[in-house]
Amino acid sequence: TTTTTTTMDAKKNNEPPPTIEKSTPSKGSSLPKIPASVLERVSKQRSKLSMVVLGHVDAGKSTLMGQVLVQLGNIEKRIVNKFQKQAADIGKASFALAWVMDEDDSERERGVTM
Image (tube, rainbow, N blue to C red; front, side, top):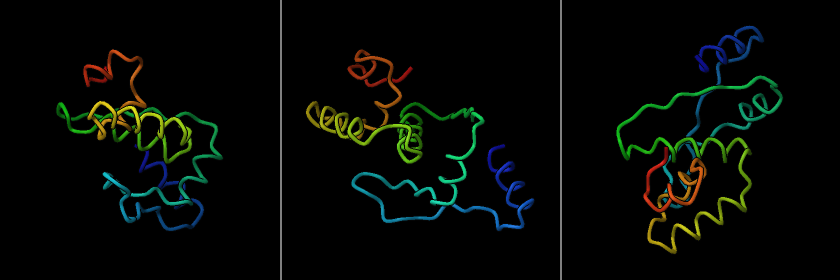
């Protein structure tokens, strides 16, 4: 539904629909980069977006949502850096973005986001 709304908005404004552009992945990340035009449009909107992410265990659902929050600017880079360091210290470097979604340390220790 988000894509439909965005595409409809683009049609109203006679703009081409937004696309997800591939960028050079950062260390350990192969997720597409959100275009600046989409980020600007989202930052100007006052409405809330609810998302449901479904997937198999260990499919990267929390990591995906952590990446979305970071790219939208909802999570400060210093917090991500802190999580990256903590995750690397315990041998779970790939979990750093998933930790953005964790409520407390017990979830991080178990490696499971609720």
